[in-house]
Length: 125
Image (cartoon, rainbow, N blue to C red; front, top):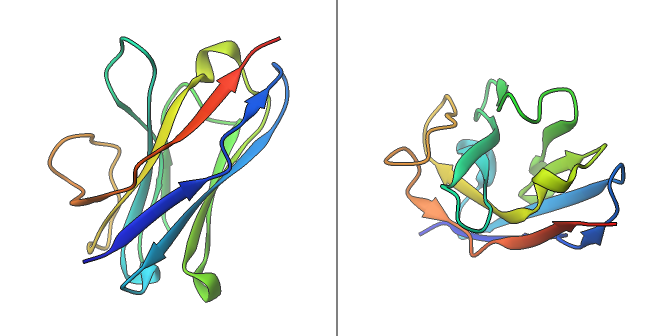
């Protein structure tokens, strides 16, 4: 089974940047569609960004468009989430998820079968 581990979460000031990493093991991550999701305290988990497998097509949630960028590093079995111009409302636990499908999705439920444990991002002044 594909195993995913997120890293890179931290405390950052508003307007700052972070890069989150999602490392896959057990299988070649480039064959999988990968999504980033987040869950803030007391809120539902929501889709942030995703990238398809071979096509590399991407999709972004409306709240992060123009600020976040998802990318792959196939040589290292990694997917990254570059987060710029961070806002207080970006505070959440961020999860990566993967599924052996061509296209990605921002759907939280039922699309991805492999999930990581999450990494905490806190945006605060």
